[in-house]
Structure formats: C-alpha cells, structure tokens
Amino acid sequence: MKIEITKIDVKAVDERGALHYFSTDRSGEFLLVYRNKGAVSGQHYHKGGSANKNPEDMLLVQGSLILQWKEMEEFRNDGVEDAELESGEVEVIAPARVLIPAGIWHQTTAQTDIVFIELNSLADGSEDTYRL
Image 1 (cartoon, rainbow, N blue to C red):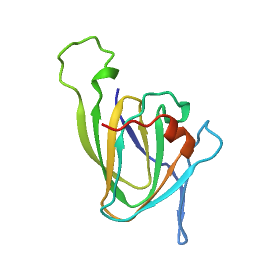
Image 2 (cartoon, one colour):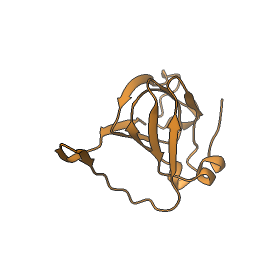
Image 3 (cartoon, rainbow, N blue to C red):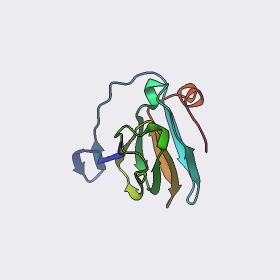
Image 4 (cartoon, one colour):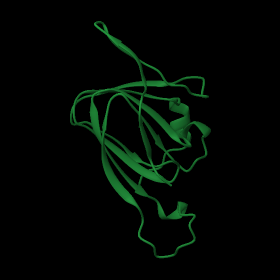
C-alpha cells in the first residue's frame, strides 16, 4: 500500500496562465473544497466499501499542504507479523493528484489557502470513513 502523488500535466502556458489536463473514469457528484491556511482535514481512513474512496482521489488545484499518513494494521496484506507499519509525511504542491488507498489513515494541513477537488460525493465519504 502506498500513497501516490503525481504532478498534473501541463498542456500549454502563455501570457494568460497555464492549461493542465487529467483523465478519470469516475463520474457523478464531486466535491470542490476550499481550506484556509493552517486548516487540518481528514484524520480518518477508508475501508474500501465505497468504490470512489478506494482509492481516494484528490486533485490539489491551488496552494500547498502537508499530507501525513499511516498504514492501518488491519489492512496489512504482506503476511509479516509484528512488522513496523509504514507511515510518512510529504509536502504536496499544486497542481497535483493524490491517490490514497483504503487502509491508510491520513490527514492534511494546509500550508497556504488551498483549493482541491475530491472525485467522490459526500455520500461516498459518509459510507466509508472511519476515525481512530
């Protein structure tokens, strides 16, 4: 299990600004989220019951954040007992795409005011969100 962070590809840049592109196989209702500098979000994990939360797919459109994550023991599938659970912290700078698999506790802290899109609905989250 690992979190995947990728830059969102740039298609063109000119005096007006930049044009970026991405593709997704998801459809339906998505969340457009604004968070103020210093705001902490997440602090949860998903079990994978909702297809749109497995993995959680987030597009950071503007700003930067710190993403902290920790592997949940009940989701280990490597067969190694008493192995140290993986965890980490990474800075994510827009524009970037973050994929968080089920079984990973995660939280974000906005380093600046941020804007992101979650490719899931509120119902997806409420059906498959667990806090420690």
